[in-house]
Image (tube, rainbow, N blue to C red; front, side, top):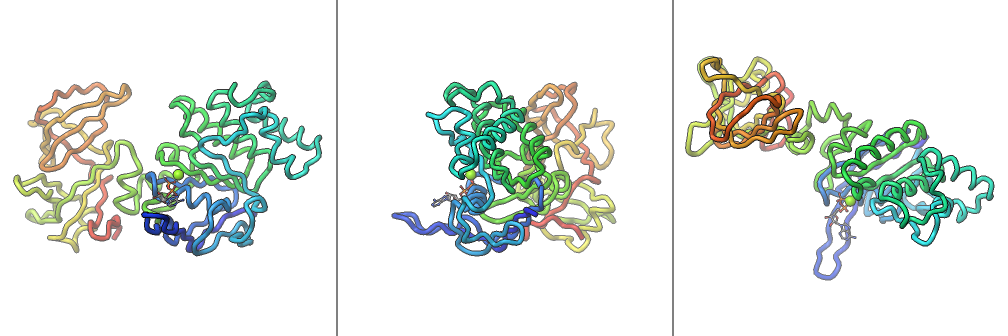
Length: 377
Ligand SMILES: Nc1ncnc2c1ncn2[C@@H]1O[C@H](COP(=O)(O)OP(=O)(O)O)[C@@H](O)[C@H]1O
Ligand SMILES: [Mg+2]
């Protein structure tokens, strides 16, 4: 079994020169299951690489434990952890051929020549590198170099693969195809993989589960759809999804018998959104309290004309639109907020046009601005 268990794992980089000590990872708990594809995702500097490097044994642990299977590996040398790591910059030896780059780790470990040949051959055919074994890295494209780096990891047949932003140096098209290749590889190798990226699209498309990190802490761990549909807090709501969820700050108010979200705005009245039965139940103990109303761009509908607007419609002014081909992102101004809606590509909206929106409130979320958590009861 090769699950990886991080318990209360911390890393503080010591003070150096003018820089004070810095806690990059703050006591995280995470279990990566046997044969799982786990993605660590979060903004630059949130501690992803530090976490991965501690798992690999390349960075000393300040506190906590790392176990692979049942074995705590805190004091195990990197080479004895049965782990292979693929880096963003490939880290190939420029003076060696593709074959020698892939064979290098096995030679160091004194594998027999036949065994090395068989393993490199097998990895090369999995990755489509059979015809390039005699080339040096400088005669390869970025995508091919990254495949050699992956091949060098595969030949070792490790229990756990670690990837640190392996696609960041590839162009957009190459990123998409290599993304799919790595996912396929995960299925055929049946190994545990931990994959670091700052790109939420990579996280959503590749992960069995996603671990979202921010400032050295874990924000949420769940399947891609669960983090999209049920974000645990404001950070996840704003990070996963592109364009991101619209987050409107306001208060819970009463309008007659009905609970409404009342947008905060110092100058104008701000917009009001009637809360449906589900949202009213979530908000009923918070009348008069501050609240954040979250709605994804695809859950905002444009109403054709002000005359057709039902009572619950929201006035907005068109700011600008971005036609994407298959859809259009429409940026709108309401009260004090700028919203984005995803609409069909056929609609034409000139800047400064007054329009009416409807929110699909059955898909909306409420958050507590103090705790930052999504309100679930
Ligand atoms: N060797 C180091 N010494 C001091 N601080 C470091 C060192 N390596 C990383 N850091 C800091 O720790 C934080 C987390 O870094 P890192 O794990 O590389 O983030 P990520 O991979 O998520 O972008 C950053 O603020 C970074 O500046
Ligand atoms: Mg990093």
